[in-house]
Image (cartoon, rainbow, N blue to C red; front, top):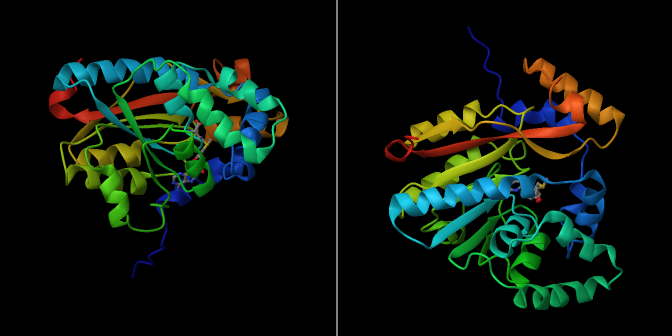
Amino acid sequence: MTLQTHSEPGDRFQRANQAKASFGDVYNQTEPSAYYRALLPLDYRIVDEAAPMFREIITQWRSRYQQRHVKVLDVGCSYGINAAVLRYGLTFATLGHRYLETRSPSAVPADDQAFFRNRTIADDALSFVGLDTSQNAQQYARQVGLLDGAIAENLEQGNISSNGKKHLQGVDLVISTGCIGYVTERTLGTVVDSVVSSSKPPWVASFVLRMFSYDAIASRLASQGLVTRKMAGTFRQRRFHGSDERRKVLQSLERRGIDPSEHEAQDDYLHAELFLSRPADSSAG
Ligand SMILES: C[S@@+](CC[C@H](N)C(=O)[O-])C[C@H]1O[C@@H](n2cnc3c(N)ncnc32)[C@H](O)[C@@H]1O
């Protein structure tokens, strides 16, 4: 007789997640000041390091499908930061410094809406839908105009709603920064299934901390017709929060058989890798 133990996809990431400092209290505020104030001192920079790669992927997608408009789904979109960076050409630090001034929290959304409205759009053929469990963050991002649609659902724990499916219709590219580990093949698999039922399979571009394995996600995406490649190089996400986090993250990497000596242990930053999944007929090159 074999004893079956029930384990969820997220359980795999539990130990690695425990190694990381938790910023859960700043994810679901009515405006992003606390988020920027927590992450600016740690030089959070994955959205800046990701932006040129996302732009290059968007260029390749446009060339492959001969279509300029790209509908992007940002998984773990938070306050719409990837949208702000990609649409307006801003950086995390430029955005974040606005939140170091003292403003009344209730005034921030309207103020930010005016700020974005008055900026030149760097790429006017992108639309953004966000998926995040943080209802407040999404509401802010919609209110200020960074997101065109939002899905506030936890696809790790439940099925997608019909409203969520509606927002996913026609998504061309799924992106994420800082979110794999919170989400697994369950979320990305559901997203891709929902898109495929309405249009062609989306491309999926995920920046993934090296302490998290992408294997289960890649194999779920393979079963949906997407071929995953790890792109060259590593990308700095942020500085360690302190010596305790540093020690636990290095241990976590070593447990995965990853040598941190030329990256995390050398510069004291968490490093991510980029995984790009595309239909087999788009994957050459
Ligand atoms: C480290 S933040 C990254 C935010 C943003 N992508 C960035 O790079 O600035 C992680 C985000 O994942 C979201 N998140 C956590 N669990 C989630 C889930 N099950 N589904 C979708 N989003 C989730 C959090 O609410 C948070 O906004």
